[in-house]
Structure formats: structure tokens, C-alpha cells
Length: 302
Image (cartoon, rainbow, N blue to C red; front, side, top):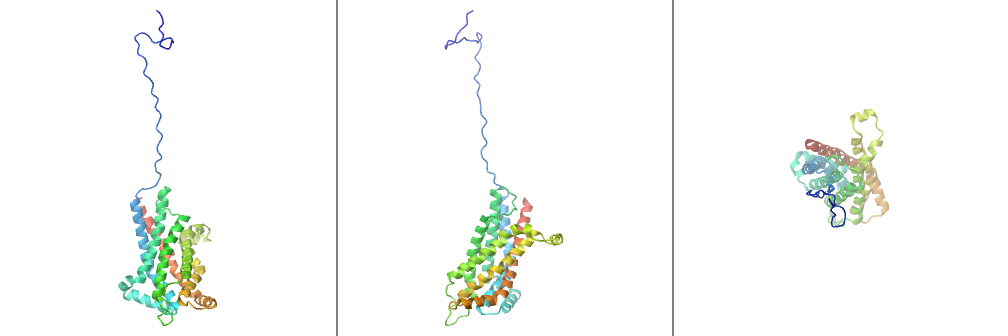
């Protein structure tokens, strides 16, 4: 029996009548696609929690802040003494609450703090979604500072321009209450608000670990809560002169700088204490309520 050769001249080792083997198909495993690692679980509910927490916090703190802001501006303009203005507003709040709660001053303050808290909450939710973190986690990065500061300053500058016109100097032949607020006042107000926002949203997580709290104190209040109260209040010692100078530039457009420094020094102590009393509910109590409501709502579904 002679061996057959194939067409290439090589020996054919297949037995007669045998079928050639089927070609082997080599398959490669498909590489997995890069799936998104974003944490989008219950995202609509998380956004609802952000909005509800902001509404609760702003609604709680706005009445007191409205009273204090009005009193500081009326006192700085010489229209009404600080104590008298506070007593008048408190009387209106308790005797005619419907009138107080639908007034323009109150609505301006409510919009300011609702927008500020909602922005901070939204940045936290965006960060936790993109970085696949716990939904109730918070961030203290530059994105939060820039976004919150931008919204807060924009709303606050508008509020301040309206408050300054409403509660500034009484009309006279020399001073018109409807004249525009100077750009220098806006710049001072913007710097003031940047300091307050930084101390309210970014500084507490940084100073909380280094606060000199004893174990007994920590049983009563956490480091995070203590920092949330102390940081915004302490910064008022440095931001209040900016606030008073901005008001004086509007109230007395044609006085010397020596007179301005004297006016700022005269009103500094009372206004600093008043602004501390204002910022503690605004970003201290309000911050704790905002964070607590947000976390509680998220814990319900997540």
C-alpha cells in the first residue's frame, strides 16, 4: 500500500475513508465594559431629602435672622436703636405672625438660606454619587466652598441691597433712600459672606478633630456639632467690621475715613454679638438641623 501525499507533497496520514478533523475555533473572552461606578441608588429620594432638609433648616432660622439683620441695619443707619428694633420685630412676630411671615424682609432671608443649604446638600449628593460613597456622607472640598459661596453671595448681596434701602437712613433732602448701593459696599459684603460660608461649611470638619474637648463635654455634644457652632460664630469677630464699613459707605457717602473708623469702632461690640447671635442659628443650629434631617430621611430608604 502506497502512502498518499497531499497536494503539498507531504505524506497524508489520514486513514482511508476517515474524515478530516474539524477546525478548532479559538474564541477569546470578551473584555468587560467599563461600567459606571456611580452610586445612583435611590437618587430621587436623596434629592428630596436635600430639598426637605434645606426647607426645614431655613424655615427654622429665618425669623430670628430677619429680626437681627433688620436691627443691625436700622441701628447702623441711626433710624432705630438695636434693642428697640429687636423688640418691635419680636412684637410683630408674636402678635401678627401672618404679617411677619409673608413680609418681604422675611421672604428674602428665607430664600437666602434655603438656596444656601440646598446648594451645600446638592454638592454632597453629587460627590457621594460620583465617588460611590455613602449617600449621607458630606464633603469639605473646594467644589462645595465655591458653589455654596457663589450662591450665598449672590443671594445675600441682593438681600443686603434691599435691606439697606428699606431700613437705611430716613428720607431727607440730602440723602435719597433709593440711591444705588456702592460697589465698594458690595465688595465688602461679598468678602464678609465668603468668610462666613467657609467657616460654616468647610472649617468645621477641619477643626473638629483638634478641639480641646474633655470626655465629659463630648458626652454632651459631639466634636462635629461643637465645631459647627464655634467656627461660624468666631469668624464674626473678623467679618463684622467689613459689614459695618459697607453699611457706612451707603449711609454716609461723604464723610472722612477717620469718621468711618470711629463709627465702626462704636458699633463693633454690639454688632459682633448680634451677628454671632445671628450666625449661630443660621449656620450652627441650622447646620445641625439640615444635616440631621438629611441623614434621617436617607436612613429611612437607604
